[in-house]
Image (cartoon, rainbow, N blue to C red; front, side, top):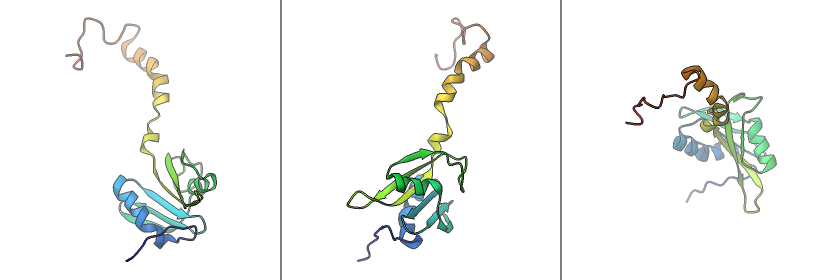
Length: 139
């Protein structure tokens, strides 16, 4: 029986099956690497790079925690990502797997900050919609 085991010394071939599964489930670009060896970058069902590392993968392993951030460097510079450590039985980070964070693309807090300005631009000083108007959502 074949076993897939991920350890701090897993290479890109070892980590590929798990990274590909994450990619197929989410449909998002996925990356993975072990602590001691570079890993893979997968996009659109294809291995784009089998000698890959990224700053957030490295930081997630170092911090041994889930990271949601927008990297300032690397292949995904300026793109929100979410990366989780893969831990061994001693709870040590031995690898990391990440995906593009589509929830991070929509900054709800910023949208809410701008909501009143947007409403004033669309509706002027009057409430929007006016109390005697009906919108399709209210019907």
